[in-house]
Image 1 (cartoon, protein in one colour):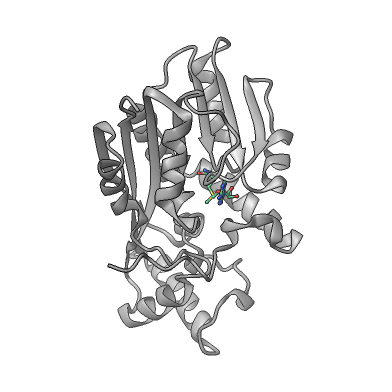
Image 2 (cartoon, protein in one colour):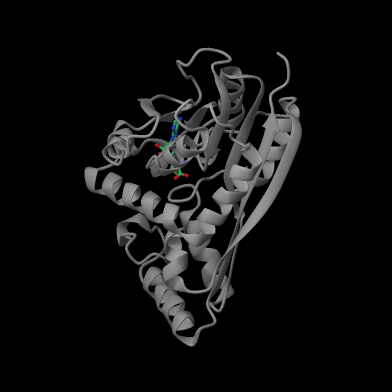
Length: 278
Ligand SMILES: C[S@@+](CC[C@H](N)C(=O)[O-])C[C@H]1O[C@@H](n2cnc3c(N)ncnc32)[C@H](O)[C@@H]1O
């Protein structure tokens, strides 16, 4: 079998620092808004139960974005513990540092696929909605395992974009719009979430748990926080659909919202396992 092709058309999240500064600012604000969304908070509660952070533990938040999860993890491990918030984007790390609350978080830039952290140096890893953006998820997972001590736990959280479905809007139009965004605002790797368990089985992790959390959005404003294709603030230049399609689609989304029958669902997987002796 041929190896999977790399993500040639990369999402903005693959390299936030190469985006125009207004785009980076918009995406960082979007990350913070997602962190406040009740459905993302539900995903995170599931992940916290799967990771089981212990007081005094040293944890890594790989691809830490706005840093809100790293600070939440720091509260769990307490003053005797430590959390390393690592992100590829220097602008993202700078924004996360601005929100620092004095907790035991150390912020650093780095590539999850080639980290400078020593082998066996952390007790646990949280990696949320990052692997869908990297070129080689198994290589990144290998790195996460390398830096985690035997007996430590790794928790991967990722979207299954292929699970995205709508109701209350014309199905054919939804299909066109969703296909338009894949590979750009949403990743080409549509099924990352559902592949996580297989990847951890192949990497010989034990005590696996895999939980699909299906996020449910019953109005367009709530959905727009997580789904770029229903967000009217995503500029028209980011769309590749023929002229008029974006406007027609957003009008249908609005109308469904007004009728009260808009519906969108998206499954995000929470998959965790324990690192065996190496
Ligand atoms: C969708 S955001 C998720 C951020 C955060 N984990 C959250 O759930 O809010 C993806 C993050 O992964 C980071 N990222 C992308 N590729 C990366 C890589 N190779 N190494 C480290 N971080 C990376 C991006 O800069 C961005 O902050």
